[in-house]
Image (cartoon, rainbow, N blue to C red; front, side, top):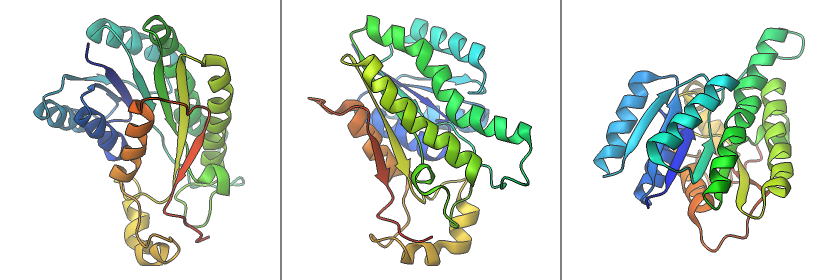
Length: 247
């Protein structure tokens, strides 16, 4: 039976690249996002690859909605093999400028969303013999948000939380479910285009591989973690930044 991958925030950017890369490996795809036109376009691309693809509109910070969506996906596809927690949002405000509501929203979309989708997915994976979970953290979780970063401390805190969650759940969910997270550096996406266009040459000088990252770079690592066999990798966070030392 064909395996299924769920990608939150899969309508564009890194999420879209992950969806296309996993579809190229033969997986069917369920996309969760708020961006309806972008989801429709990505779904059409996936179907052009010969895969079954469906879209589900949801705010990933909504816990009850997450449970409903996962239940619907399981009914539609009959299984869940891979969950990619990719949805996220930045926040550029510092500690003296951010409001409580803004801080809570940053945590809810980036960190709580992982909990929202992992919790209802785990029983389905366990009943099916296991699965893979990959969550998108950030280089900011390690650096604290360098000056080149779009987002600052609240985003860094949320993304660092994903690393802690990943390590703890690797112990809790093994041996049948492997869970890892990825920490991208500067990636050229729709959300980051303002930064990369303004500071692209400067940022590139501080990256050992001499270029900015692409969504496809991240998608290749996601695909490896989602599909590699045999698998002996869990509880890890992978930095993918071309070795960036610019501050």
